[in-house]
Image 1 (tube, helix red, strand yellow):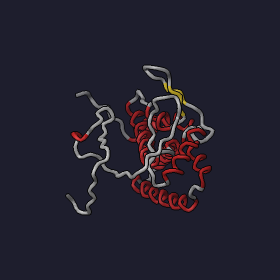
Image 2 (cartoon, rainbow, N blue to C red):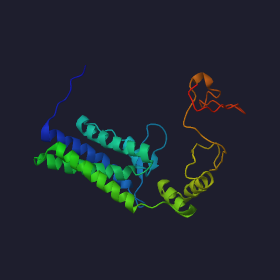
Image 3 (cartoon, one colour):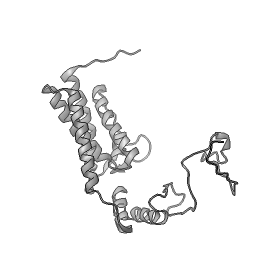
Image 4 (cartoon, one colour):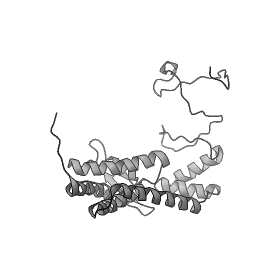
Length: 227
């Protein structure tokens, strides 16, 4: 078992903060509609050019283990934001950097870490409440297209396509994005309902490549009690 490196107090906080800053500074270059692109080197194939915060964050690994811990903390913030909200990863990274930096500054000055944490929680509740008051639902296809285009790196074609899809399936509909076999981007609408459940056993799979269980014209039993 390899020996563990140990670091304490201010020295440890400074090392972690350096890692946080390195990752956050790379990610926040992509912030907003005027954000810049980031070029990511790949071991195989051409470099990737992206403006997506979480994509940049996932590529960052630091040599110093303590700095890397700080970077991984902020990377988790970006990843969780992507999973929960689907967007806003760069904003979440910038906020995390500021909270960590100011939090460490206050801890160094003698503040109680638990009191700081409770204060942050109260601030979050207040900010969320205010954002809910300021928020407004999108109205019409044009606004949906504008929001979708920003999320798609200002690609209006993708934005318009998503707006078309939402118009057809409604706000409660399900939209799935898949890699096309050709060069054109197309929209296919499938009528019906979708339940958030899968097959009980992998033995039901009929398409082993896509791991799907497809049944044509099945008989369906709907029952309110457990079978």
